[in-house]
Length: 557
Ligand code: AMP
Image 1 (cartoon, rainbow, N blue to C red):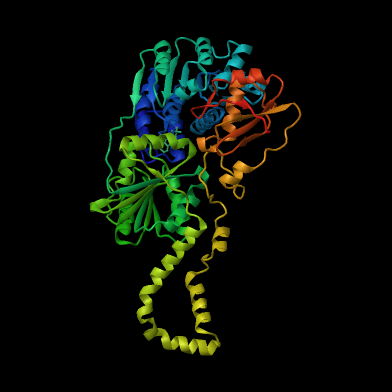
Image 2 (cartoon, rainbow, N blue to C red):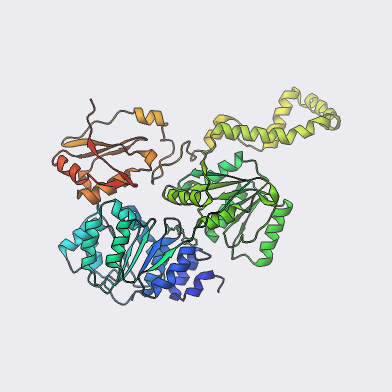
């Protein structure tokens, strides 16, 4: 096992892939990767039961890259994903892992973008095609041979694809592929419809499922917070302001993230250090000793590096990045609540990871309550409380030790004791914001409400819910009709999800769809008046984020 690639080295993957994995900073394969990679590398069919956040993309991307021949300039692997967002995400992951494989190219094929360049990229010899089923079928109608060289097929989030109504498209695609191909199916759930597909189209598939035993976690208060990935550091900093902690461990996924977050914390004056597999054993021990005796208060660690860590001072665990499976969640939060003490565990959840949260709740048999980021008032109260706590033990005898000096200074400066005390406070608090206005100014990126959709919203542009509901619809352009769905931000919908679903299933060009407004409890979409009834009929069974879209014409009066 080399230092750089950790547990990945054992897979015997192409060294160029291992080098790219090492560059991402992953330390150890996740459970789904551990089990799936050898099966897929061996060319076997497989059914993997796993959701987003388990590392499933790399679980199929690494072995597929290993199996393709970069010298052959033709499509060799096809990955089907339910939405444009996921297709792009998977294509980006492939590009990352193929960075050191010259000659390997990846093309993403999805609705809403012109077809010509996509087809050209396939014909120019992209070996990896990542596609949404609807658009891929459009390509097949133009060129039915386009997939004839594909010998690896992955269905990613197969249950979502069926929910979005892609069943018929999948059948068309299966027919266009060589029957000898390898087929790998990933799905969070395995309803009968998925089993039926597996029965018909997979050959003697291996089943991979992350075992989830029920686990008990007592004496640990758990909460979660919804954030966008790019807001995690500012969220962590806000939480630290109000959480009353003694020592704290934060978990992230990569070595780089341990370093980045630890230095962001240090820059804010916290006694923090990183703990990851690249740090030599004796240095790791020093970090843990420092956490034990209070020279450090925060350690930012990867799961691997924190193994066996037992520090009774730890009152809090922050899961800054989602664990890969419920077991590691339970293991992580078990770092607190040691020796019968109470502990608190916070989990940051990005919109795509909400499913994983449900799995954690199911496995631990406990509800992980949602908390919001502290607002400016809460931060102010916490700062004043800290100041009060640090000063109050001094008041009892400070007058006897420093009273005479105070008299002399007020006389020398010619000011009141109140003015002098204020000056000393300013000095002691070192420019820290201690008014509401100053705190609000200092935290421009921290939103007051949690994100609901996939897209980060712009700061300063987040009206409260009542306001959002009341805003009047904007005037409608000529030839457009406004339609309404009861799905809104609180259902986890973002404009791009609606756009993706309507483009994929409605067969419209991107330009045909006008403004999309997502409110908390509903959304409005502008569609062409011409052919509207037909389009709505076509979208009758469409689902977005697992719920029925039920788009209807909306009349303002
Ligand atoms: P996925 O479940 O494929 O959506 O992956 C979730 C996240 O985990 C992605 O941001 C990956 O980059 C990251 N990831 C995947 N495998 C590993 C690993 N072995 N170690 C650390 N991070 C990983």
